[in-house]
Length: 429
Image (cartoon, rainbow, N blue to C red; front, side, top):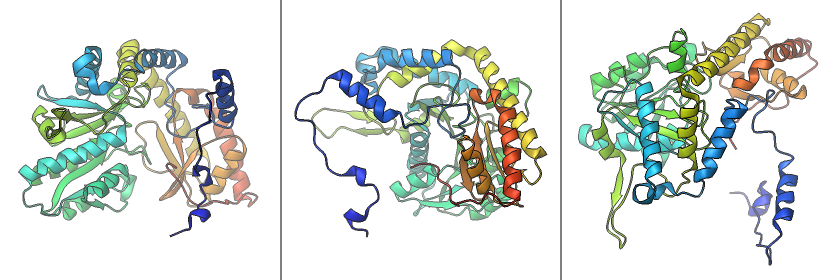
């Protein structure tokens, strides 16, 4: 273990409150001074996930609605804030419709995709006590490209996470998953699509496994939930992934991604409302009576709910169709341009707004660093090495400029003038 003095993050050292309150104008000025070193929250030249820009007018609607409820505590919605109850029902109902849920389905709001996956695993684990009694040491099977929140939850709950090896096409290997199922398996995971490659797993085949063995199947559609339903209506070929597939037990969809709500609003959707019994935690052995919640968080701002409800109603189907159409057109332009550059390859067949490309000929991380020198802010994958692009509306205007610079940087890398200084990749802090 390192000595405290040797830790790199020295900014976490002890500090004290100022002895006296400070003038707000001075505090605000200091905030602006500190903020000046931050990247903008979205930019035409930035491809790092988290921006989800849907247009200035949408940002305004989302922010104004959020501000109207920023001080409301969603924990007490059923007691004192009936408007928040309505917003949640409307949002969940809309998502259930988009995911082709049966009439007996249900769902709830979470604060983000990670919480949705945590609750999916928690619910499946509780369900397994009644339906997988032979699973004395529970395991969940996770495709190689699925989100690490599955593993995080398994770690927190003492469940064994079995992450599968990489397979052809960067999709889940159904045969390998089938071989890995045993008496302790309680849950299968799938992505629609995965974050690294934007590729959807073969969910009908995985669902067939879940039905055959009596397992819970969760589909992580946090990235595809606000793309795929509209892409289908626009004529794109989208693989089956939602509740229309028998055997899909639960689905997570983020509204704060391409639904354009403010952070943090996600949903956990259940095929059968009776499954909510396994999701909910209830406790009453304390002085204040019954404490009962569907999800992990207690107190939370009502701003996210209001923001999500406002944007869904502001855009409607027409608004989402317009935005999805523009994003997918932008994606196709990027894909075509990248494929024209000798030595570059697209990893997989992207189906949403996520693109990963690399090379078997030269150092793709050197290309990434060369692009960064020209002001392009992207991210990386490490398995296999790749540049990762996360597209939103802002990128439609810069496709040609990006591809021009990319071709020039590839030429320079091939000549040996640029070599990468860093080889790794990082998803978060």
